[in-house]
Image 1 (spheres, rainbow, N blue to C red):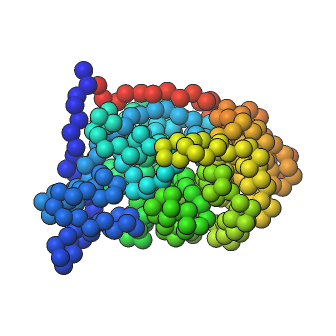
Image 2: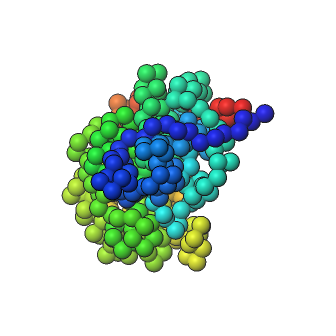
Image 3: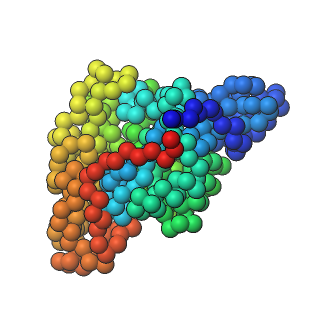
Length: 361
């Protein structure tokens, strides 16, 4: 029998009382200002009796064992399994959200599983997962829970991954990323107009997060851009984004261009053609970026890792299934070129399986 879940009243951080007695949330750049009982844009942070509470601490929309490549992370423990979970809510309002049933959830019946940080860490260990991913909705909004899970995992030698839009304040960013080992950050577009119109957000905080990860942390991170026909896929925008990427992040940070499919409030756009992803990949590679990938399409060349030194196929990928592995000590077996990432001598053997699991019944 499933136990009915109620919201938590876990004390939230990153807030201040304003002179007018409203509480200002300082976790994300929205800076929501709340009177008693009000919730932030994300829905899960609420003012209760003159303090901020995280209403989803210890609550999850479900757990699943995935291939790490599904996050997507291609240079972080390739071939291994990751225990994935999310909660509810989001601090962006993307009209094209492809997890909208979770990220836009307003009902507690979406929170089907309850688990403490220690239970999650133990489950990951029991299931043979090398890492735990905060995903499906943005972990920034449940930062207190994510940090505690990350600490519990670290005690057991389990790594943690944040799959995020990177929309976080300068105040909260260092504390959040100090606890995680890897991240995939959505760079949704390279114009403020796109962020304003389609995400109800701003571009600059995301760029700040990317620069912070690259220059001030040891977090391994990769970047994903969902290309939407007619919105963020012009040559001009891709050239500008690639120039910024090379200048600020360098050639070693992997970049994934993924295909859009009509969803949520953007049903009038067509699927992204595979040729668009290949064009974006070619533009990014022409700027000197070493690891540029295509996703959500069947593209062996665009999904595989190739040696920048000699052109040798290093890690073959067919969707999430790994094929050839031509690495030794993280180097190309042909020319000795060392590729960037968190790599081990042998690849994992999890494959493309996706296995839902229950932690609480």
